Amino acid sequence: MTITPFQLHVPQTDLDDLHARLDQTRWPKQLPGDGWSRGVPVGYLKDLAHHWRNGFDWRAQEQRLNEFPQYTTEIDGLRVHFLHVRSKNPDALPLILTHGWPNSIVEFTGTIGLLTEHFHVVVPSVPGFGFSDAPTEIGFSTAKTGRMWAGLMHRLGYERYGAQGGDLGAYISQEVAKADPDGVVGVHIDGGLGFPDETAELSEDERAVFAQIEQWSKYAVDHHSLLRVAPQSFSYGWTDSPAGLLGWLMQKFQEFTPTTALPELAIDRDQLLTNASIYWFTATAASSSWFMYDNTRFAWPTGQQHAPTGVYHGAPGIRRLAEQTNDIVRWGAGNPGGHFVAMEEPRAHAEDIMEFFGKL
Image (cartoon, rainbow, N blue to C red; front, side, top):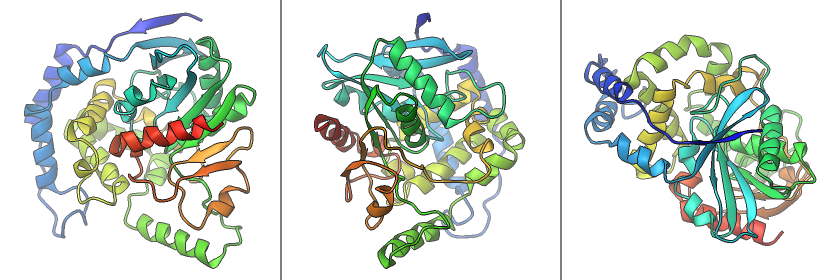
């Protein structure tokens, strides 16, 4: 039950080691093909790695993260790291934010300050990510994490609270409501609801929407299959080579920012590198794969009807499907931003969250 204050401080030896490894990177030759058609271009990654080595200030980012009150506590045998930023309003609604993959608490650094006017904000590191312990056995699930988050909120003294997340966080936030239906007043997610399974009967508009998504997925790396089959095999490169880790992360962020030519045109470059640095210093690129490794196949969030749901990105034409398994009270079609909207459009994201919970 102990809650221990936490301050982030990476040993200088670890920072020196990162710099030495970046200096000694063995770069491959560029394969033929245009742009990103073969993956992350060598010239692009060289430039980003050079900035990571020579322009990026980890200590400044570390200090910025430490401006948020941080703690650790043990839940079900795992040490959980979390930010806990209280509002100046003592009667503010508590809100737990859950980050996605391949992300970290860095996902919300731009929104926390905007949200604390109306919320007591709790941002945990998902087990296996960053500074939270990794699961030690197979079978760890989003449902297990949802129960842990409910326990964390009650441990902090919060009996009624909201849950919010995108990507992996959308799955976990729904599980929090299932685990604590009397405590969760609402669930706000960035997107992912209403996508059909193989048995769904679709209208013409719904088939058109899903066809667009399937077309996009043909050009994306299927990380679900990759991590489900052999996360240990790929972990050697991610853990031993910062350039290898950076290449993997930027491949995914490029796919998750399809509206721009480069990820840093949508998300601040140093925010991307702060996220990469946390993965590097904690060596959690492999352990972050647990939720995909423990699944037999990819599936969209199934939804929940224990608490009202608000959706920031509601794909046009599929709200009908989402309402079959969710009590949808907000469907934000046309909102700005992409997959990791908290990083791309923090103000719009925060305003949508505030409007959703303000009407409950």
